[in-house]
Structure formats: structure tokens, C-alpha cells
Length: 458
Image (tube, rainbow, N blue to C red; front, side):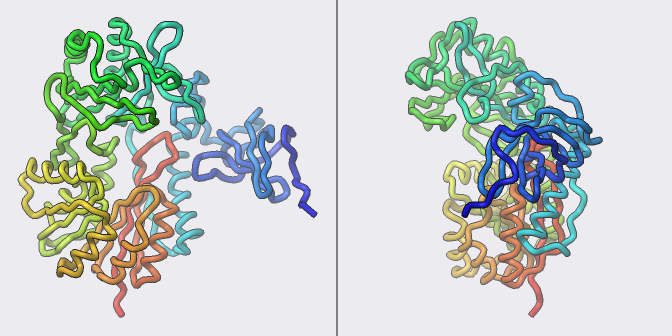
């Protein structure tokens, strides 16, 4: 006989929120049955409507708040704020930091069984707005005019946006200018249903330290109507522009960038700095979107590596060499590995750009290349990992355990997979000394961490 649930779909009930989920929804319980409700905050008394019920949990919609949390702040009710990707903007910044730090502590305890590990207070930003140095904005048409902004959740309906509160002002200005110019030149938007039209996305990148701007126009077609006029107007209206690039994506796909890219005007790359290290950024380069906090995170990784100048360091998942080149300033030798060939080309170019000669980069999967290096005698004193959200591959973790580097520095963008992987390394002979959360993406639910592990003495 199936269990009778304590709530029914479409029922209105009064609740008190107890917690927040990893994606920022409020958690309320009715006779132990959890309900997840976007925009609810711990401690708030509210009326909700139950909109979906499953066997073990349900979902609700916030209808009325009887008693506000002291962490709640007023936000605009327009669609840009409702759907703009800022899941936590209704929480004070102090409250956001508290939530993220608590999330890290909870998953380390629950998933990693690491409740005794020292978790430092999270490192936040002085100004938690207008920090992103890159935008990729979908383009559509409405009432005969181009619109550009972001998609409503779980749809491909574009909300026209004049400003994003988490993009740098130079990025907002660039996207708006290109949208207006394309409107004036009557360049048609791409229609994904009919697979007709021209303009798919407007992309902008900005070097905060150098003041250099790149504009990327993504089209379905190999040619852009009135291309020369488009370039002329972009240069006239955006004095910081140093590169205008055309990317061609002719496929029926949700992937933003196509494989073919050509420079329409200016340079192939723009430049930026993280600390003292200079980076060349192309249209296709992976580069951290918040370089201010990236510097904070990487300085912590460098501190945890505690290099004297005699160490061999391996950087798994090295990307374009951002952490590798930071480490190379203090290490004897750094080996970086990354599965994306274009990223390795960028890494080599960035090493050359900074006259760094003690960093070597290889294309391949970390779990394949690092065991090969190990057999060849390239044993790391310090191993650094900065994996994607899914965490480290199991084979890589086992290689680390076999290789026995004295220190492991784990940079993570997902506390849950960090906790899981730390547990594996702990069981394999390592001790997690400390974890430093860093708020790389204010107003969103994402949190980065840097963890220091040392090899236990037998």
C-alpha cells in the first residue's frame, strides 16, 4: 500500500523555511516531507502553493511572506531580474556569503565525512556587482526589431535586456551597441525553428586590466550583410575595441560557437593580466570570467603549494595555463595537461608571452597522461587539480594515490564533488588540512574552493 503524502498538488499551506538547497531554493518540511520553494529564505514564515509532488519530496511556489528574513533585500520585479541568472540577488551579500560557506561545511561533513577539517571564512568581493568580463547573448526578433538578452528558464524565449547587473559596464555597452547597429543595418536574426536568418549571438570579451575589448558576431551564414558598415560603426561607437571577429555556426545546435572563426578588424586576441601573468585571449579561449577573484583563488593555491623553487609540479586540467603559469613563477618545473588541443596551444603561447621556460604542456586526458609521466620518472612533489564540475576522474585519483606527491592542491567549482574526491584521497593516504571557499560568482549559487592536502606519514 502506497504511503499517503502529507501535501497534495495545488494545495495552499503555511510553512517556515528551514534551509536552502544547493541551487538556492528554500526548504520547508511538512511532517518531515521536504518542499523546495524558489526565493524562500531560512526563518521566513510564508504561504506557498504546492505545484508538484514526488514520493520523497515536492516543489512549491512562494505566494506570500508573513515574516521576512533579515537577509532578504528588495529587488526589481521586471523580467530581467526574474530570469537573469542571479538566483541569490534577493539575499543580502553578507547572507549570500554565509549561505555559501555553510554549503561548503555541510557537504564536507555529509558527503566527505570531513567535519573536523578547517574551513576558513569565505573570501567575498568588495563590490559584488558588474564583475563578469564576458557575455554570450542570444539574438532574436520581436515586432520587426532585434532583441538580445537571455532565455527564460526551460525555454528558448528571449528576454530583451539592456543591462546585466553582473556584467562589466564595458560588456553591457558593447552588446547594446552591436544590437543597435545590427538593427539599424537591418541584419536579420537567426530563427532556430526555420533554421533561417543570419545573427545568432553577440559575444563580448573585455580585459579589465588592459581596457581591451573584443566583439564576436556569431552568424549562421558565411557572409554578413553590410559587413564593412557593421565594422565601421562598431569601431566608431566602441573606442576600446581592439578586435572584431566573425564566428560561423551553420549547424542546428544549441552550441553557441561554430568551428570557423575569422578576424574582421584589428587583432586576433586581446590581452589581460591575472596578477603579474599576462594572457592572450582569443574568441575561443577559456578565460576566467571574474579575474579579480581568480587572482584571490590562485594566490591561495600558490600559498597551499608552498613552493621553494626546487619542486616539480603537475597541473591536471590546466586549461590555457592560468594556474600552471602562476606556479611556474615559484617552481623548478611545471607540467600541465589538458584534453582540449586549442587550450594547450593557448597555454604554450601564454608561457612564451611571459618568458616562462620551466612550464611544459601536453594534450590528453589527465588520467592517461599523468600515469605515463609517472612511468617515465616525472614524479610530482606537488600535484594541482582544477577539474570541471563533475570532479576528478577516478583513474586520476588512483594515480595520485600511487604517485604519492607530498602535497595536493585541489581547486574546485563544485563543493559536492570536492567532498567526494577528498574522501577518496583521505582513504588513499592523504590528510585534508584546510579548505578556503572563494566567492567567484556573486548573486549566483556557485562557490569555488581551494583545498590543501598532505601525504600522511606511514
